[in-house]
Amino acid sequence: MASKIASEIIQLHMQTHADYHNALNALISRYKDASIALFDSKKRVLYSNIPESADLIKTHKEGGFFSFKGEYYLFSDETFAHLGVAKMLFKNSKPLHFSSLYRNMVLVFVVAFLCVIGVSVFLGRLFLKPIRNEIIRIDHFLKNTTHELNTPMSALVLSLKTLEDNQQHRRIKIAIQRMSFLYRSLSYLVMQDIERESFALLDLKALITKENTLFSEMIDYHKLEFKSDLVGVVLKAKEQDFISLYSNLLMNAIKYSVMHGYIHIELTPEFLKVKNLGYEIPKDKITKLSVRYARFNSSVLGYGIGLDLVKKVCEKYKMRLEIHSEPSLKGSFHENSFCVQFQG
Image (cartoon, rainbow, N blue to C red; front, top):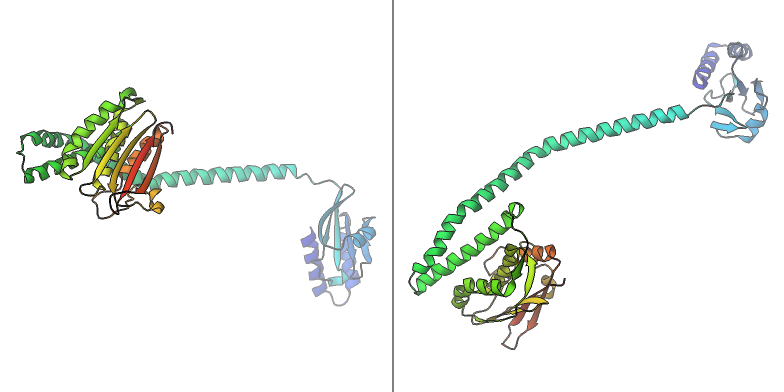
């Protein structure tokens, strides 16, 4: 109503030739049933059927809505002093009921929010479907490839016994053993989600001794002094988990040992420690070694996933992996130790 009356006042001002008083009276007669008060630029009442209007114009200088003694008012200055009216006051004698409006606003907001969520989920699934399908395809490919590699890898390992003991054949043996190790790591990594192996009480000394035998050819080839100090330890775990942990630690020690260096294995009820003589591991890189694809010596062949597998097994069984690199008495080399604390 305020905008409508203000518009009429402006039109009357433009259409009336100086007879502003009669034009204003004509306007007032059309809205005599409305609770309205008109003021000039000096805040004097031109017309009012609101008894308290004279007091309100003095106390409320700003325009807009306000309440006073349970009533709702609106001050408007949209007339811009046309017909001599500078301000208008409107009164609603009945309180405005905003509760239904609030409920409608909340309802509209909730419906709009749910619609946005629904559309977002639909579009997200639509756009991510090709990526999800590609991930599934790659996963199936890796599992199928790993499965198909099992037969030729087994044949290669069995054929090692038929090779004559000469330098060329020793290199072939080492290459096959390394391929076998990589295949076991790949199989462990890819097949974890379908592995059905249950927990068992493992004889760690027996498992370590068996793994040492598998790696003995490789250790001899690198001319490394090998020593193990093992005590009987029983651990409840999955066999493949522990084999993956130990074989990766041992392979890591072999790869990063210097020629004519050494590897020492120590097993106690508290920890498993693998030490080797090699180059210094900078302290700033020790914490990054267990990150996948991280390697501190790029001159050595590898992919940087071995210690990541070790770390995952440690996290699974609440163990703690500690890495230290200390100066050795043998020249400028360092003794690097990888210790798995069983108690975490």
